[in-house]
Image (tube, rainbow, N blue to C red; front, side, top):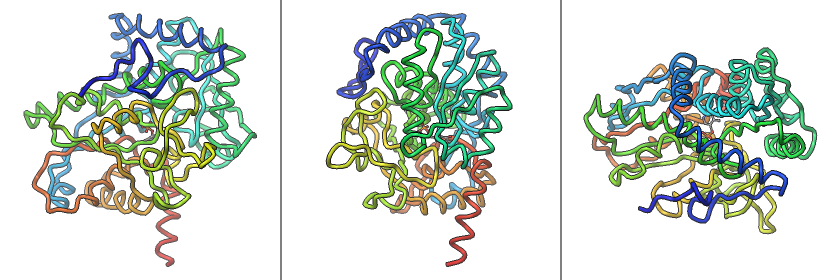
Length: 398
Ligand SMILES: *Cc1c(COP(=O)(O)O)cnc(C)c1O
């Protein structure tokens, strides 16, 4: 398979690009250049590695899951991003971009957040590096995610509620972009997934490649080979991209990205962008997008706030069209069932986002043959206990 050449063009096949207001182009060019220079800079990498090791807690373990393996007739390993500081993979990228901002001499960070997970990761990185931090968050989400708002404020971030549109992530992102346009000199915009204009999808994927690189080394040590399959959940697609990318040229490694089907792919309440969407432009890049017949962006729905986004990273669109990665979708109910199985059999409560990856296991219909499978355990479920409890209470009531 041909690797996409993104460095010069900012495209993965036909996807990606820089669909932004003219005023942002110089900022994106400066960012691209600074990023490529620092990518070659040993000192930058030494500092980043130091932070990943001593602050984030890397390398994260690759845990063999004996009881899940027996249950499904597979040999299952879990890459434990849930054990990262702040409880999910997002910190890998937040630390990387914050350090990049600092090196570029920027003093103000802006970010957008939906459920608050990327906001918390960004506020954490900003506190560590002494950077000012403003987080845009839909007013609806501010109400729903009080605890994460409190966390961000505790770490010195300013949370700005957004009252336009549906008052959720999509509107918070638009507002963050507006702020960036008017304060482009001193501001650095930390984007939380492999989305947005070039170079963000490339840069964010690269900051998460550590997930796949560690998995590769750890699996070679334990099993002496590459896996038969990799499985990850896909919202914007950052944990999956970082996990898959170091294996992309290994032709015999199958890869599965699991999106959120919500109430079902055929229902209106879904977030399965790659299964149901069509190419379109959102937040600065061309990629698959949930939209109606008139090209209006559809509202996404998922039980997990982190997958509740109508877009997806352009590299995933490319991998889908190339057939390199297979994308499927799990419903709210399927994710919840998989979460319960994992918790009861392994003593690990995954995040609701992550539970969609575990739902892949239930979709394997044939008697399994001990295939070696690694699931990226992108985050832990503590943050979701309220949702999990009310879902379980409701289903018991039926
Ligand atoms: C945010 C989040 C996701 C979804 O984001 P991606 O960019 O698709 O990785 C998945 N899992 C967890 C735990 C998250 O917090």
